[in-house]
Each structure stands twice: as structure tokens, then as C-alpha cells.
Image (cartoon, rainbow, N blue to C red; front, side, top):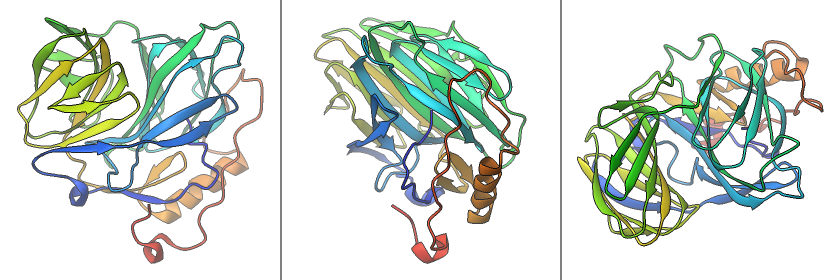
Length: 321
């Protein structure tokens, strides 16, 4: 998914300076962003004061939207570099096309994982004949310096490992959780899991104390470590936890996101993650000139133009909000 913000700001992410080394309960409120003509997303990361959770660098939650008489998601071809995109649905379908020639329809609780590496472009759209509701999350994972120039590729996994406990079904979409390992390719120690809770469930989920964690609320009413978390909000949990208490007041859907704190300091702008402003500027130029990022074939429409970069150098602006 694209960041369609036409006023995209340069943002410094990563590094230990933003990591909380102990358990906390920091509730993050979303920023509402338009995505195309008919989709509005709630952006949880990057957030004021909270840039990343492990290698997770970008989190959008959208829906449930009634798109029965609407085109639904329509995101034209756009570029990415230095990251992986993770598409995750609870309702609906998303048709993915990219410049490597991949074509896939992603359905609920199937993993769509695109590794941009040095450069890729893709489009996302609701199929012409689509389900009534669209509800999901789009997330980015930052690639470490040692792997950020890998060849671009796309993975679609319809069968993912599950953990079950009374009142809980946990689907591991990325990384590993309590011995269950996703088939999706990862480049840093990480976890992403979909937690389906039944009303009245009360349990504790095992965690790695070396990871930092956050929980995104997708639906229903749940309490995470005693904190009520409403759909479209996210609770940052810090590090140092060996377990996470969960209680569901109704049937509820959550996403657990975590990983080792990301050591490197990054620059994120629009749909790029790099290390310097010059690198970002070069990527923007190459996208606008039609080189490097390849071509998405089959999408009915032109590519998305890049916004203008901020005129003031990042060093003079400080840590950008």
C-alpha cells in the first residue's frame, strides 16, 4: 500500500533512542488519511513520539468499509525501496500487481508479503467484482542495511501456522510465536500475529523479553494488560515482557506486532526507506523519470506521481514529526 500523503515529511526512524527498555502501556491514537477516492485509513505508525516497533515502521488500519456500491481500494502503481509490505485482511479481497510480474488476489487471513529490496513498484485494487466489506491492515517492515538491496520479490501464503488456546486462535503471519513459524521471509527477529478472541476469554500470551511489542486493535472490545483497546487504536508495550495478559469483553480481533529493537537509524519519506536524504532524492528522481522501479502491467491507469521533497535539509529540520 502507498503513502498517498501529498505533503509527505521526512521522518527519522529507528535507533535505540526511541525504544522503551521496560514494560509500558502507551496508547497511540491514529491519524486519519485518505487513500484514493473511497478508502480512509487510520495511521498508527509513524506516530508522534513513536516511530517503530522492532522493524515494523508503518501501520495503517482501514475499515470495515461497506464498498458494495463503491470501487473500493484503488491505489495506482507506486514505488517502494528498503522495506517489505505486509497485506493483511479480515474482510474483502485486494488484487496485487507488481513490476516483477506478480499477480495475486489476497483474501482474509492470507499473507501478501512484498520485499522491495533495492526497488519495486506495485498497485493494489479491489477486484471489479468484490465482497461488500473491506477491512484490513497494511504494514511495512524496514530492511536492515545488509539486506536492503536484495532482489525484489513477492510471496503469497494462503496457509499459515496457528496456535490455539481456550478462547484464542493466533495466526502467525510473520516471524515466530511460541514455536509456530510463518513461511514468510524475514530479515530481522520479528513477529506478527493475528489474535482472534472469543467473548469472555481471559489468558496470557508468551512473549520474548528482548522484543518490543505493540497491539493493534482490529475489532471488538478487548483489554490488553488491563488497558481497554478500541478498534483503530494501538497500545505500545515496550520491552522486558515474558507474557501478555489478554481479556475479551466481546469477540475481538487484535494484531500482535513485535521484534528486536531496530538498531539502525533510518530516513523514511513517502514510500521509501533509506539512510540519507540524498538517497531519497535520487529514488524520487528515478521514479519520476521512469527508471529503476520497473513497470506494473495490467493496471487501468497511470502511475502515482511523487510529491515534492521538503526544501530544507533534514539536518536543519531536526527530528521531523
